[in-house]
Image (cartoon, rainbow, N blue to C red; front, side, top):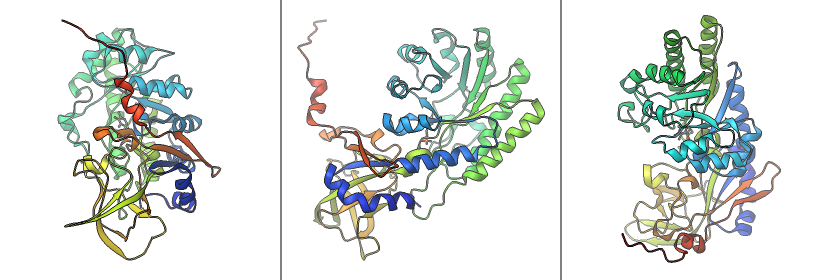
Length: 418
Ligand SMILES: *Cc1c(COP(=O)(O)O)cnc(C)c1O
């Protein structure tokens, strides 16, 4: 099921007054739901000697939400300078930070090493001589190529720009060691929105096998393996939840078998984004127009600049009309105001009959929602609210204004004659 029932029960009775107080549109996130999912994740991996989630900051880069992650003991997976700075703002330092960049620039390396550094997760062997100062702890991102079939969304690893190839992996660690590294980690990220937990178990098995091979060859041990993110959530009402408990148990079994063979086990790191926050956010928007031509269009006050997934991937996001659950339905397209015909939150969807002023709740926008927002067509990104565990709401990002839109145009003359 989309949007957890507990979130619905907490939010829906309050929604009319929240909408009246703040004005729509807004994304609102459920602090308690995020904390509950974080606890379930930790419990699922209790059988592994050392487990840590590094929240993928790109999924929901709001410091208030990141602070909740930090309180749960999570680290942060970052891929840009801004994401590193956001994470440091909530107190993350050193090995709380995993820097998983690709096509890494000199500026990226400098930021990764700043303020006590971060774990450097290198995307390519050619980057080794470009690391300004080889850190003690180094990780490589592995791309298995034709050894694994990627999942549906992320695609075939052979066509993926990420990671070190199978043949390069051993030379990469050897060279890193020659350059002074003495602690090692191994990472991969092969799935996206994968609901079959076995895929992640296979990934853990693959990484542990590689660790055995590389360790035997180079005489090194590994501090951690990182199985990446990509745990799926059920966007569609008929989709089942990922079986987190079985996933944790089967992965823990693999780690224990490894420990039996080698007398130690590496830590298990994961960098889920969507799974941690996706179901715990919704986009709330008001119906403002209704248009009957060849189809019926319900126009709302949000656009794809607040949620790009339907337009970009044809992704399904479930929609509720507040106060009209279970009534007679009609088939409509729910649209924003962009001059792009893919600016639609739903296409030919049966929904209760909507009139101007109705509140629509678009589910599962807590990851890759506002984070993918943009300004095309002069559309402004909406505000973000946090429904706190104590039942109060907090504005955690204001809506963009036209002044924000003009901010990069407001500067003195800057003319150059080459
Ligand atoms: C996007 C990304 C994640 C998070 O993916 P989810 O599907 O949100 O779990 C984790 N790691 C890396 C390297 C990523 O690029």
